[in-house]
Amino acid sequence: YPTYVDANKNTDGYPVSNQSAMIVVNAFAGTSTIQDLHIQNSAGAGIRAYNLTVNIYRCEMEDITSSAIYLYQATAGTIESNDLERVAMGYNSQCGITTTTRPPCVSFTQSANITARYNTIKNSCGEGFQTNTWANNIIYDSNYLQDMRCGFNLYANAGTKTHTITVKNNIVIGTSDHTYHTWGGTFMGPGVLFNDLNRNSVHSIYVYNNLVAGDVDSLVRIKHGTDSM
Image (cartoon, rainbow, N blue to C red; front, side, top):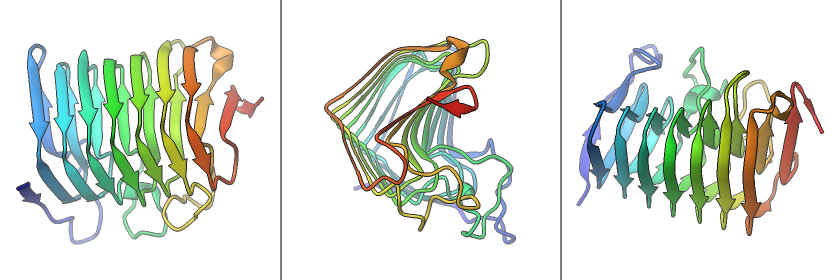
């Protein structure tokens, strides 16, 4: 049976900190495994892990204001069979929770050698998965994403490299539904978004055998700086 971890939001609906999380693992060496947890009603993130190899299996998360899973400078790991719902709710201007940043549901920032597979994310406000700044060797395989702002956001800041990203066998549906993922009704719909290619910072991206349906924008959207091409 899952271990239940519950925490209430602040009475005003704001998170204590955008960096806070229900589970925080901070280490510069070694391997950590997090599994079979039920995390709900977090005013910040669900799980944040820093500077280590991390495996996250079979966790259920719901009503999360920030990212459900946020990895920073992870060296390796597997994110598998997690069930996430109503995540990144700080992205939704209509939900009564306001944050200055609007997070993705799952973020791999400056992380490498991560496989995310068999995960379900639905009814959520941010991007499903995001690779961000120096992400390398990330594999997204057989995930199911329903009713969110965007399926995959493959992004790099200026001067950084995001490369060797594989997106295969995933299902992305319902990104045209404004029920959850809205911030003033802007930026909706791509199944897979390549962000800021003009900086020569996103390369070796492989996208195949995915199903995208019910999207308002496009199956694949390629952004050239601030424009699309």
